[in-house]
Amino acid sequence: MIAIAQLPSAGRVLAGAAGGVAVAALLAFRLAGHGGFATDPVGVLALAAGATGAAVAATRLAGVGNRRAGTLATWLCAALLANLVLAAWAVWMVTAGHPAAALAVAAWNSAWIPPLALMQLTASAAIRTGARAPWTHPVLAAASGTVTLANALLTTASEPFTGLPTIAPEDWRTALEPVGTFATLLGVLALLLVPVTLWRAALGSEGSARARIGVAAAGASAAPLTVCFCLLLAVARDPGAVEPSLGSVAFLVALAGASMFSTACALIAARGGVEGRQVAIVVRGTGLAGAALVVIGTGTIIAAPGLRLGASSVAFLVAAVTVVVGGGAWAGTGRLARALTPQHPQHAQDPQAPQHAQDPQALNDKGLAAPAGGATVTGLTPREAEVLAVLAEGASNAGIAAQLVVSERTVDAHLRAIFVKLGLTPGAETNRRVRAARIWLDHAAGNRGPQGLSKAD
Image 1 (cartoon, rainbow, N blue to C red):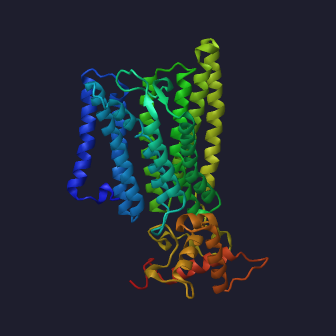
Image 2: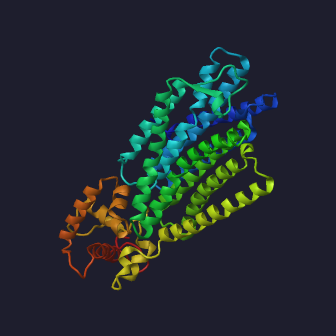
Image 3: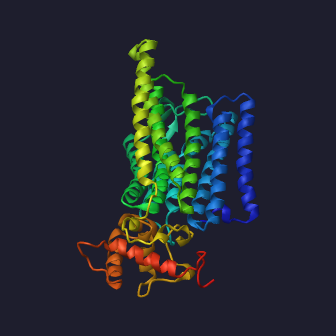
């Protein structure tokens, strides 16, 4: 498939024009008196902003050399624009009383699913090297496609309906309920694959590798948090008695915001050399967003009319929940941010490690410690050199596997071969990983001049 960013200029103009026409049409319907939530200016402009942010991220990701992540960000932009186009089509069909209105509504009702997968794929691809995709990517794509198709075919709006139905459960009915439930469960589990594997790789790594993979993991976590927000809206509807249209607009804003957050994380991770401030913002943002969901959900239940609590009691309980959950999230995300922040590479823990190990000039455009001029350590194959470069960045076996898109068993085999070729035998007083990283960085420094330039230059 060809991404919009790779189309001729006429194709890019056409794609942008379609989104612009959809936004204008939805706002025009609103001015004409169509009060459905799909025409609410807040939701419409939020989706347009999310699509714009994804388009900008696609350009910048391609600019730093990560074409795969740039392509996925382009598809994310296209998916958000498609949501707007399908919404405009559905509103028009419903307003006109067209016989195919139900089909248009069904298509629009499934347009929110693909962006969730695409924001995860974009964040995950930002740390990958090479042309291969990890096994989690095709699994996520297949699961999301299945869920989108099942939702479009099995879920229909309750008849009759005025305008477009909200996300309230009573506005929809599902044929073959067990199949629909299974598809929903499949989609939720699929959205957990990428963030779980990335967090595992990040927390097992050290130095800048931990920071880069952690930022990508936070970006991938935005999708399941959006799903949690959707479930929270169901709680807000019943027993919370919150207006469904308000909740529906809030979901569109959350979807757009999650897309922008994921693409921003992808940009940070793809550039390498992640700063502590960036890590803190990303991690705290993710953790506090989750805490906010817990507080809002709990507060909605506490304030439900059925509990018949007084205003003072509700305020006290909500404040207590906010303090406990918010404070815990703040403290926990602070510790996680500090753990992810690159202090010193793993090899720098050795007192004999060279000072240039922390020199940013020893990093290539992907943030990996690599010699200048394409030189490699004598005796290593190109793949072994790649593995050693990522090891020198501080990555664990899982982190190396994540970035190079190989299995951990393959990484282990490469490391054994590297240690043998470098003459690093296991011993009680040595750390072969540290010594191998030092050899790589020493070789990198030997290929640079006094200003950090390659001798070849």
